[in-house]
Amino acid sequence: MDIFDEVKDSIDQFHQELSELDVEERAIEDFRIKYLGKNGIISNYFNKFGQIPNDKKKEFGKLMNSFKNEANQAIESLHQKLNEKQTKQEFFDYTLPGVKPVEGSIHPLSKTMDDIASIFQDMGFSTELGPEIETDYYNFQALNFPENHPARDAQDTFFVDDKVVLRTHTSPIQVRTMEKQKPPIRILAPGRTFRNEAIDASHYCTFHQIEGLYIDEDVTFSELKTTLYLFVKKYFGEDVALRFRPSFFPFTEPSAEVDISCFKCGGIGDDCSLCKGSGWLEILGCGMVDPNVFKSSGIDPEKYTGYAFGMGIERIAMLKYGIDDIRLLYGSDKRFLQQFKQL
Ligand SMILES: [Zn+2]
Image 1 (cartoon, rainbow, N blue to C red):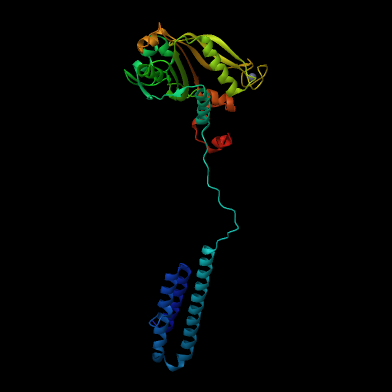
Image 2 (image 1 turned 30 degrees about the vertical axis):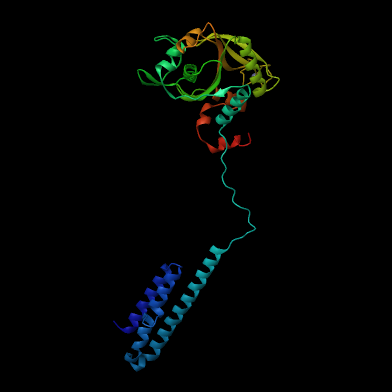
């Protein structure tokens, strides 16, 4: 191969490497040394100048000079590019507005739970918690659900085994509290509960409840009514009316369900989407503690009376904030949750 072809190959190689070179200080310097260094490719060719036949010396000199010039220019322009790149990286505009950190917010269920609890706490209720995995005894038996009682079927239960369940309500906390405290007892029992239900817009496999329990001598149904009346006025508004409908729960006798007048249509009904035209919204269940519940917890039903009430947090949150699908509360969709930031 003649030396002219060798040089031309080197020039091709040079172009190839130049096109693939990283604009980084180290890479540019290595590239410079390889071609323009003292023992670099270009110097080596110049050293062979003496071996070139005289009639070819001029042509060779021209070729080598243009190679060297091109290499010098390439290195210079690489340094320029590197410089621009570094300036860009270091440039910091202090007048630019800052990037706002993503801010979380309280989940609407937590907010609802906290708001409800704080109203009852102002009335002297303290908070008790209990396990989410319960024994059949605390979840059913001690609450006057005897074995094979049909009321057990009404609560679609997740069974861990024959004697252990995921609690279907927060009422076991009431039993546990009655076992360890002497009256007067005035507690709130908030927490997560579980039911094996088909999931749709108004049912989910888990939900939250908050229950209240007050036991002392001479506690009456009218005290229960007053307590709930105060709660409803404070939480839903002064203009909201209440009504008590007789109902049945195994652990209270007598029992009632409480409706409030629809705060969307003012109780008129008509085409109201919230109350479905009835003018009323069911919000909670309540009643006087059944003497059988007292007996199983070691409290004398001849001496003490008490009331209990309980409500579903999801239902209250959905009513209060106009949420039409319970699944939204568990979807962790930031677009949904961000709407509650201002609460
Ligand atoms: Zn309505």
